[in-house]
Length: 150
Image (cartoon, rainbow, N blue to C red; front, side):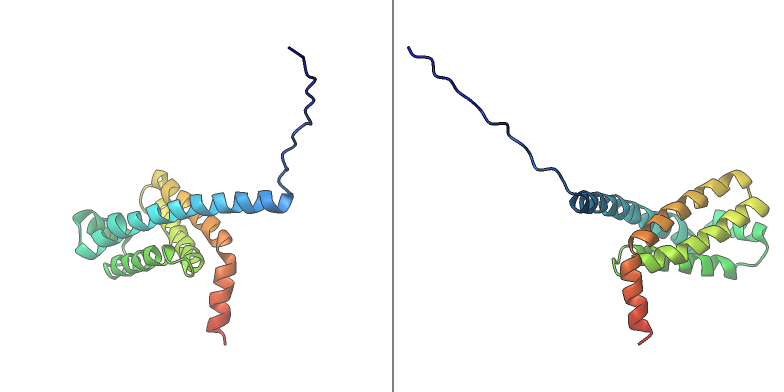
């Protein structure tokens, strides 16, 4: 038996360049945000807008406490439903998220000033997620706005 000398050359794996690493990170972020968009859209439509349209007792009572009349319940439900639909349309997701930030701002103020201050954290958390979606979808939003202004 003869012993052979076996030399190996070190195997190097190519490192990700900054552009490739950030593109991969961006894809991951987009997937995470897409999941959040779907969940929030389902929540807004099923658990928030539909009870307002159906006149669920809790929704009616809440808007009575606010004191601006039941018309606000319908407007709020319509904005939530439109925002929910917009969140799942990639081209409209950024605009929908931006509009929903405004709605959540109103919800935070209403909770703090009129209803139950502790519940202001929920719409505040939603607003943070909507801000991330609006930022991530800013290119699509610019495109849509450019087409509207032609």
